[in-house]
Length: 300
Image 1: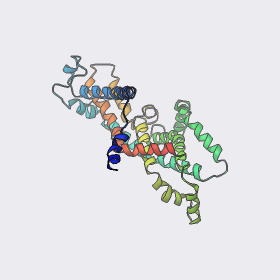
Image 2 (image 1 turned 30 degrees about the vertical axis):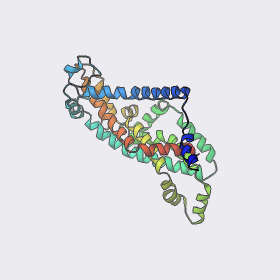
Image 3 (image 1 turned 45 degrees about the horizontal axis):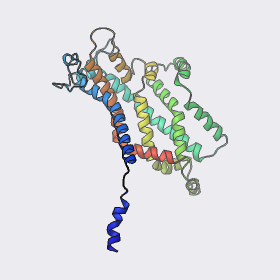
Image 4 (image 1 turned 90 degrees about the vertical axis):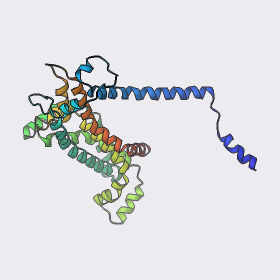
């Protein structure tokens, strides 16, 4: 009996064949190449932003800075010229925050309510409405951009905060509704019927039952919306106006300089400053993001 217990771990250990070893090494090599593909540009931007222009002109792109300095970061934040003004990208940061918060909250909330209604409340015409919403996912933004500009100009909202927030909510609604509908469709209908028997209404069930069950999926939607809205350039350029220009628009004005010296360290620092907020959101909610993606893939 003791000999069987001793040999049990040895039997469980499977011997790796040469073919499996080669396949595993190939997988590791592929993953390493993919990591380098995405990490190398970030490394170049970071080390370039810490170098003075004299060192950058030497052409040592991958070399570490001899004397790291945050002077380019300070100038990119509060001193770089973005047109006629030389206030850096700090004003664009606060404009992006003002655009981001209501856009993310409203788009996720409206998308969750629509997905919940389409999945659990079978009203007449629900399938046709769902088909129309799904079509909206595949309509290019450029197709409806000019009509929306005309509409906002007609009602006097073009170039306002309300206009850019409305655009982000409207354009993200089809995908958010489809995303939440697929998740809520996997929740057993018996749970909804039991809540209705207990006297729960549409909003009561949604707030007390559906939302607590949607924590991981809500975090996935949060990461997706924060990334998409924060990194948006085209909509912010067209609908935000001069007073609410987001960070990406000011970054474009800094990088695309047509006169004078091109300050590569300032450009890279401004790019890193623009990329930090969505990266922070992802890293803070990374494990929940993976859980939510898995939940969305196994339901619906």
